[in-house]
Image 1 (cartoon, rainbow, N blue to C red):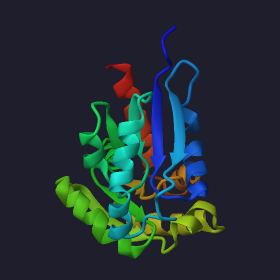
Image 2 (cartoon, rainbow, N blue to C red):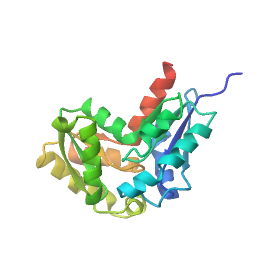
Image 3 (cartoon, one colour):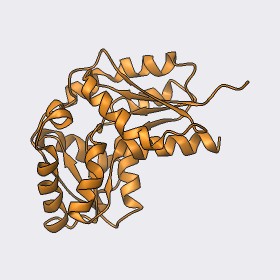
Length: 219
């Protein structure tokens, strides 16, 4: 009997609430006949990845986790900074997806320009550097912060209301035709946010897992 395919979604921070949010995000993509989708927490990670130092600190632990996972067919690094993405790809022949890359590429299939909701303003320069590397600044409408911590965005009250306010500014002031939620584990807000703002809203974890499922299906 052949082994069921498996996708490993790794939360690079050590916040279990974020990992639970990832499980909620990928639940609509989990089918009996499809790959098993497993979400896990990187114990070595900080409580939230909010700075370049935080992102760099998980690079080698992520590489080691990818190298040691012999029963996994595809990986998803579930942090919007895509920490360790290229280093992890060097460590395996299996596909490794970063949610920022996948979220932005998915947004580009839904609109001519996209905006990003950041957790904090200090994350924005790091995200913009990444978009420059991807050569996508000509499609980038803007990025605006919630000014919340990763932990607050995962569990705090009032998160949706703040997201609606920020997304409305991205649409009306910046001209974004699609919105990417620039954090993992907030998929429960995607549909109400999309309904409130009236443009496509992309959950990047769902986008990355969908691409992983496709890669496994056509391998």
